[in-house]
Image (cartoon, rainbow, N blue to C red):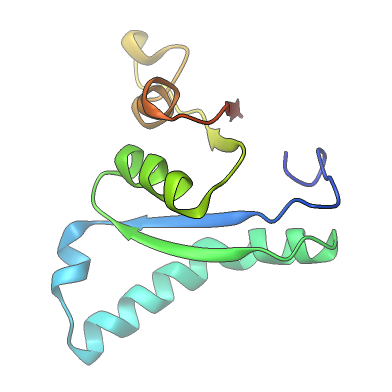
Amino acid sequence: YIVDQHQPDVRPVLLVVLPREDFQRDDAAGRSERDARVENATAEPLRILGDAGLPASVVVGYGSPGEEIVRCAREQGVAVIAVGRRGAGLTKALLGSVSEYVVKHANQPVVVVE
């Protein structure tokens, strides 16, 4: 979506949200595992954005994905939030719980993409 909507002044921020327990493991093995998770989650998006001439920054958050997306967007001063949609059953037929939370709580416009 970001590549398709490319504008010259766009600076994407990729947020990786890890479980809070991962933050509590601060030994070498825990840091290595966190680094691997972040690398795994961001390698392809960073490549795609880089190929399109859109350098992106990576931010790592811990805890509730919805809360972290809203917090990160506020702290990074983003203009628009793009999130994926994942439904789970009839109650989440239109939006997943994370995207629903972000739509309800963010101050910025939110684009939900599949």
